[in-house]
Amino acid sequence: MKRKRIKQRAAVGRLGKWLTRRSRGRCELCTERDTVRAFELPPFPEEPEFERTLMACERCRQWLERGGVDPIQARFLESAVWHEEPAVRLAAARLLLEIDDLSDPWLVDALDAAGVDPETREFR
Ligand SMILES: [Zn+2]
Image (cartoon, rainbow, N blue to C red; front, side, top):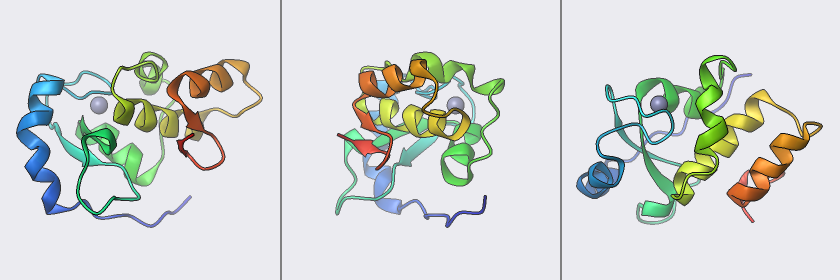
C-alpha cells in the first residue's frame, strides 16, 4: 500500500533534548540505541507536542511513515502498547493495526489500554 509521506518538521528538534532525557536516548518503541531521532505523529498540531512525539529508530520511523511492518520483528509492540507515554502508545497502536485485525481479541484489548480508537487511529 502506497501512502502519502508526511515530512517531519524541523520544529520538532526543539523537543529533542527533553525527549532524549525521557527516552534515555533509546527508541521508545523497541529500545534500539542507534539511529534514534524525534518523530512526530501526524496530523501535526500547530506546534510540536510531547504527547504526539516520540524517539524512534530508523526502522520504527520507516514503519510509521511507510508501513510494511514485519510482524516477526515487531513483537516489541506487544509491550510498547502499554507504555506510560501517550505518544508511544499511539505509535504502537498504529503499527499493530497494520499487522493485525480487529477479529483478534488481544488487539482490541491492547487498543483499549492504549486509549486508541481503531477507526480514527487517534486517541479516543
Ligand atoms: Zn525502534
